[in-house]
Length: 169
Ligand SMILES: [Zn+2]
Ligand SMILES: [Zn+2]
Image (cartoon, rainbow, N blue to C red; front, side):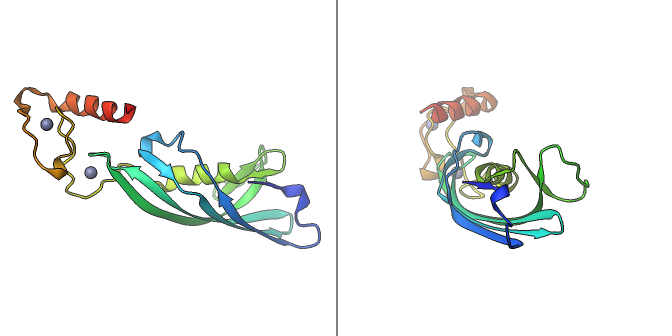
């Protein structure tokens, strides 16, 4: 979704938009995101003197992988924030939150991606007591013990190897 600033505020000082936006999970690997639902967006924009402000609200389902056992952990993520809109290169006061845009175009996906980087949780767990995966056979230890003898496995390395195997599948 792109909003062209020049088309706005012709004979009013308030604009609003809503709709659905899809975001790619590429770039969100460090949060172990499995999938994003379509995101509901609500935008209000208003002009005060020569300044333009945006109220941005979003609402979506995020499916994470548990940081220990990699099972799916769905979460509802909903946030809102207000910023001033400035063209790239414009000067602004450091203490004011801003959204910088390029060539007068508000790129809603970019604003949402940047917000998600701040709002998503790192290392989500399926439960506080998640037992993780067996470093040897990869069994989910929450579903029961396996028969592995773990005495000869260095847990520091095997855990990483195991995680990588799972992610490659
Ligand atoms: Zn888990
Ligand atoms: Zn095992």
